[in-house]
Length: 493
Ligand code: GLN
Image (cartoon, rainbow, N blue to C red; front, side, top):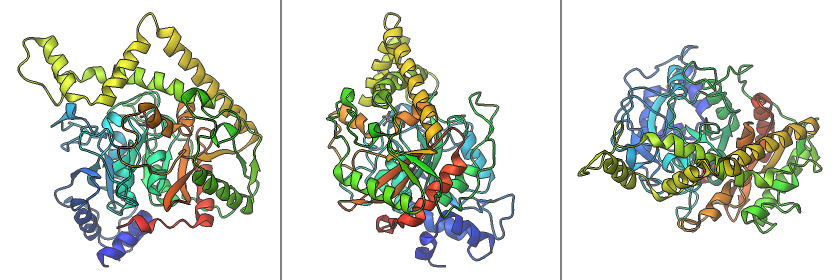
């Protein structure tokens, strides 16, 4: 098989070819490795120096359902003996002595580690411009951002530098870059994938999930990631096996379109600086025409559903996530891991200098915000209040799911924006996650699938469901994906 033919296969197609003995896993690994090594988009922070010796060969069988298919993994997943820096200078040179459970499970299922991918530092960002390794370029237009924080994973999959990739999503970091790069990204139900070995950002929100070319690949990758883990007390056994999606229709499926997250008239994000319109016209057009497609497939579009507290999600998130981050990042003090700035007179000065040199501006901003929000005098005014808003948001979704099966929104308010356009305006940057943060706070699963183009760049459609509804969610996304027929090959350069 030629390299071009190999790159043309989706991950599940490749796994099937390998299992049937028509393609060798080693040959596939080499084809992708060659592309990853010559990556011009800055997607990778590390590429495997050679094909793994134990790569699955020939008929893969049930012990290796992923058949050696190469996998790109976001930098923040600890991987034994491989640099794992979470996009930060403060973890320079850190090679963990253990591997994250999600990665370990995928390797045990037969995947092979192709490389580690670039990301915003400690997963804080929406454009991948906060990385110590420099920005990632969007393969659809190299003057634009790929989204973040899993920007390297998204761009690598979109550009055909990896068949599929792992990312993490705290407030949108799988879904938003998937949308901006024209691929599929799934944030699973909180707790369904172990967080053990993921360098933490905000522990009550962080979830690992797949970034893939299509919905079927997302289901296959998720199937081998989920499950309770004794090393993560917040992990849960997934109640069913994750199935490969098959639905062709949406008969009887009720899709709720909440005005608050779809540019409706209910004052979208007024408190967060939105002007009431918020969502770009081109994005709304693609969103509306995919709703028409859904209706043609049999779905019932329910416009009356409401998420009244969703406009406050971003404000609550930017108290809660920095609060948790300020606590999680306290461990990086120059003593245990990575960077230690030399020349300090005493221990305190060593801490200060290391953290000064090792953390980037956005991370420092979050640490300050979070420390302030958690300080004794303000704890209830900020953190306690934000937690109460979080509860209200979860209640809104629960009520909505009495009326509809899924909530649908655009994944992002805009298409990919220019590199540098929002770097000096943190609030403008935070608004990228306006439509994705509510689901994160509620802990529910949500998928982004490409639903069309605006100005020649991809638009994402977000579908969210109740906890553990992944199988139904994947089915609905699959039916729509087939009907929409989005062609992502334009980015596979
Ligand atoms: N962009 C959001 C933030 O900067 C979300 C990041 C994420 O999901 N990791 O916090």
